[in-house]
Image (tube, rainbow, N blue to C red):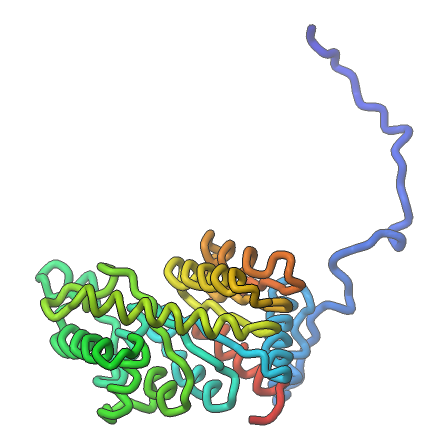
Length: 318
């Protein structure tokens, strides 16, 4: 039957004093203006301790604590991080002791390789796809595939092989190459490839057997590094699918062998909160471990230098 037009009786509504209510936004957490000429630390300390500002502080604190405990900091880098010019910042962190290992996807090592050789990367796909030129740079397709095959013969991982090749070749822009820096500093570099996703797979020189063997070896190297992250930090920067999946499988293998990852902090840095990074990096790996997952949303070319500067400023001297 229909309900009647009847106003709700508000005479018994209960209230409470505003001061007695727990509130999520408090004035002591608000941002503070900074004076002209203030230091970076003064600016960083002035950020609001709310939402993204607090998450950024948590990420920096986790890095500083991991460094103090020698617990390890692994950086997972998608290709976009390299294309946006952040490599010199990460290389500086490598030299200062803020990087225990680096993982890349296949596109990441391609961009780093091209930067080292020619000082430029990231072709215009829209312009080159129609005429059939996309992905057909000879050095990238031929040299990288040769290096991978040679690396397999030497029982090297894909990242290890490319890093050694570039470091020995002394390319014109070696100082901007993450792979060269990793080789010279003795930092493990692993590359995780999905067959058919990279321009190097379009060339006759590509060997599925070599690519697969080299990348599988890198997965095992990477898993060994993840197994040392008890109390450490894993940062996934700009990889929406491949590296989040690889990281989750590495965590699963480590735990299968009874290795603890207590107190692990995971950080995802990208434009959007997407399913795999949010689930496979931020949420699942730290569940029930006393660890913490953090999602920082924004531009790599802003957030990563900001994170690096804060860690350098607030952490111990190199």
